[in-house]
Length: 67
Image (cartoon, rainbow, N blue to C red; front, top):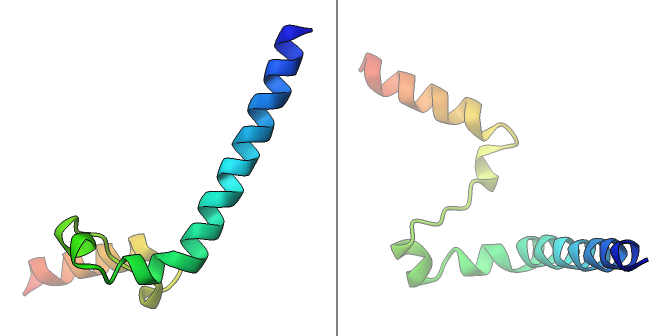
């Protein structure tokens, strides 16, 4: 019984934490990424690049090697 209740509580807290982080990322990331501290921590907003960031990164790396 204890394990079941612990698993349910853990799952509930995990879902709440996930929902909170998704909400924060969607609503606050654009603001936070413009802070000077974010610049020092090298946080970047890759939204303008599009959904396939790895493809863009690969093309940028290959273009630099060929130049």
